[in-house]
Image (cartoon, rainbow, N blue to C red):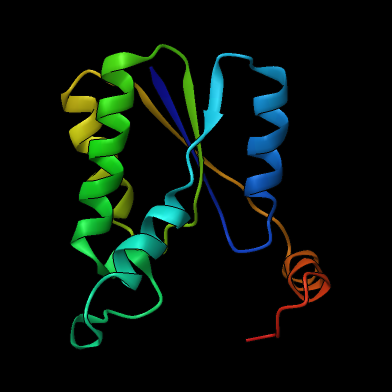
Length: 129
């Protein structure tokens, strides 16, 4: 299995790109790292709440890696992972263990101008903050 991590700011089009790639790549699936993060965060006591960024939860990294490794062990194809990473060392925390296990990982960073991203976020019904 290969992992293609699609990174970039909120609203830049990561999920849209992952969906389009999945349509064109029959041996792919979209790995929802955000759902993993929600499961980790939502099932911890409030006293352990580390904030909105999943990167504040070591268990998020561990769970993503374990799920991707289990998938790689049993399946050929490409995992498309549309997920914003904020902290500079975060990609290595996922890619390092996967690569050590022999799973090829690529990191794509999508960029856009501020106004485009702002308009997309507001169009989704989210507030400016």
